[in-house]
Each structure stands twice: as structure tokens, then as C-alpha cells.
Image 1 (cartoon, one colour):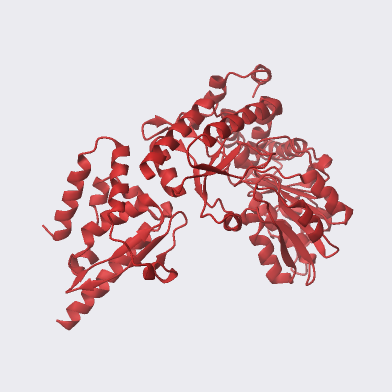
Image 2 (tube, rainbow over the protein chains, first blue to last red; image 1 turned 45 degrees about the vertical axis):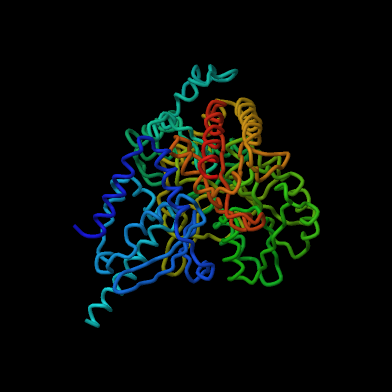
Length: 144
Length: 415
């Protein structure tokens, strides 16, 4: 099992503790509050992913072939979903992140939030994460 | 709809009976019957409309204005009957003044692309800060083509047009005043009679975006003496994809055609084509026949319910809703004009509208969140958007109670 799969299973198990949907949302919101703060310098248009409904800022980073993102949103539920995504992908090998299917989001029943029609910026954020991880993986492969 | 059913609805309709005519109101969302409070985005459709459209497709389907055969005649009669119906719905005396379009947006674009072609550098088009993008962008595009300038009448903190400023901006350079009748974001009912009188005193024609007005109250274009009026069927309980432009015959006759194609021509020759009379001059191609017939059925339905019933039910919902929402800690209503349609736009403390809308959705409550296609207006108030609850006559106080309870819950989750 990959790093990503392990982390995803852990999240799915955590969410299964909640019977009520509202409690799940509360948990998503609480996870957002624990997200590492984004440096103000990155809360600019250059790092902004436009969503019609909510905005996302994404700061990419990496070390030793693993990705590390910081991100923020002006909406709390969006921010919580960012926290969930980053818990799975951060400090995981770029090669894994680049081909991650993120199927666990289906199990969390949160996938509706990641649809482009939701216009909250999350789907574009995932594309950015994959692109960045893909480029990093390609660079690592070339330098090896 | 037969006459017995119609007359039984006139006085005091039973809300259960009323709601049972709208199948979509029985939809379940996340396990709960939907509280549909997004009527300003689109209204639900009564059986009378659905059945009329089905009847057309099942038994009358044929192209209009084309055939000598019986079905084509029947379809043409129904289509042209709907034109007369919409003329009387709006108080227009001549059905030729009704042009069917895809909706309000296309109606405004039609005027910009025909009437507007006569504008040039130095001319001005007056719009307002509370316009929907559909009454901003067509004029910006026209401005790029003709050099005419778009000027914007400001809005007060309460959400009313600054009429004093409007009068100052109105000048001999003004070639058209294009304003929203009822604001989709704020609910403000603009004093259009006075605005039209002021504009006409300077010889300036007026176009009104009536998309949010016709679902709530009787509009009489003759009485208003408005030059152009636009509406969308889907906001007045009819089908999507269809609407209309009312224009005074003198304007429509002088305007060049816009889209070219079948039906809008009189004679086509490679040496030159001559065009049909109004209204057909502006209806190129096979129209949305079922949609037009459905819109006519929606007009019938609304008048069967009755404007007094619609007004009194909506006023009750607006008053009750405003009271209930204003009592919620930290809730701020955006748009507090004294004359309002049944629309309440608001912010819940510092909570993002997206979060509030998401929580409400989980509770089976449908509201709109965001900028409502009025970004300049949101900028004016310094907010990213609002949550908007918009009511129709079929909504209930119980649904508003659910909204209020949902907002209390959202507030505690998002604090």
C-alpha cells in the first residue's frame, strides 16, 4: 500500500465515526482551522486560484522528491477540504502524488465539492497539485 | 387549465393545493423535502405549464409559419396565440410588438445590436450600479463598437437608485436609459414610472430589464409608456430557454434586423434580400415553439392565481422573512429599500456565503450564494457576495422557519 492510500484510509476511518452529516461538516471546518497558515506573501493574485464562489491560494514547495503545499481559502468548508487534501499529499513522493486518483474523496462523500461546477476553486487546485507533482517527478527522474 | 379549476383558485387558495401543482416542490434533498427559496434564479413550473408543453410535443408538434397542413396550422395558431397572450399579459395593444427571444439577456442584446447601432462617439447610455451583468456587458460591447459611452447611476447604501444623480446624468447626450425594474440581488423595486417620465421629458427612450419584476406584479407597458421591456419565461413559472422583448412598434419598425435566417425574410436573392415585417423580422430560424406555448400557459396560470393573491402572499413572506432573519445574531440584510420584491440578500456574521449555502443545502434548503451576476454592485458594498433567499407565492412561513433554524445552526458551526 502506498503512503497516499494509508493516509486516505485513516481519514475514511475518522469520518466513519460521524453518523450525522452536520457533524462531518463540523469536522471538515475544524480540520480547516488546524491548517498551517499561509504566509501573507503568498496570499496574492499570483498564487490565487479563481473560483466563482470561493477563492483558493496555493503555495507549492518540495524537498527530497516529496511535495509540500500550503494553501488557504476565504471559505471555511473549502479550507477544510484543502486540509484533507494536504493531509494526504503533503510530504508524499511526487511520483505518487502525480498519479493519485484521490478516490478516497468518494468514500468521504465529499467529491461533489471537487466538481468544476461547484466553482469553489478546489478542482483547479487539485489540477495544480498534480501538475506540480508531475513536473517535480519528471525533474527527479531526469537528474537520477 | 379549465375554468372551474381557475375560478376555484381566485379567492383564498389552499396552500397545500397550490403547492401540489408544482411537482418539483416535492423533491427530496439530502432526505428532506426541499425548501425551495431560490425563485429569483428560476421558479418552479406548475402542471398547467408542463401539461401544455407535453400536449404540444405529443399531439401538435409541427413547424410554424411553414406548412399548409393542419398540424402546422395548429402549431402556428398556438404559437401566435401565445404572442397575443403575452401582449395582453404585458398590457401591449399590438402583438407585433412582442419579439420572442431566448430570454432577457438575448432581448437586451437584440436592442444593443440593432437600436444601439445608431449610437456614436459622444452619445451616452445610462445604466445603474445595480444592473445584472446582462444589462452591463451588451452595452460595453456596443461601446467598443460605436464609441458611445456607458455611464453608471450610483446606488445608495440602502440599495436605492440615486435619482438626483440620475437626473443630473440625464442629458442631450443620453441616447438610452437601460435599467433593471426589480434588482435580482437586493429586491429593490425601482420607481420606473418617474424614471421613464424624466427620461421622456428629455426625449430619451427607456429599456427595462423586467426579469425579476414580472413574477411578482402586473406590468403594464402601455401605462408605463416604456420603450423596451424584456423578460424571461423561466422566472415566471414557465420553461427555460425562452423570453421576450416588448418594443414600441415605431422603434421595432425602424430597427435593422439582427440575426439572419429563415422566417425573418420576405424574399431572398443573391442580389439582395428583403426582410419580413415585425415581429418576424427579429425571429430568425425555427423558434422555441414549445417554450413559447409554455410561457403563454405560465401567463394564464399566474393570472388565474391572481395578482392580489400573489402580492399578498409574497408580502407576507417578505415581512415575516425579514423579521425572522433580522432577529438572528450577526445577520445583516443587504438591500433595505422601502419598496422591495420578495428577495432577502444577507450576510451571516463573517461567514462566507459559500459555507452558509453549503450548510443550508445539507438541511434541504435551497438558496443562492455568490455575487448573483452583479459584481459591480457587490464591489459597491465591499462584499464578495451574499446569501439570497427569494420567495414565490408557493413558499410558506414554515420554510422560512426552517431557513432561520438552518442559519442559527450554520452560525454556530462557522463561528
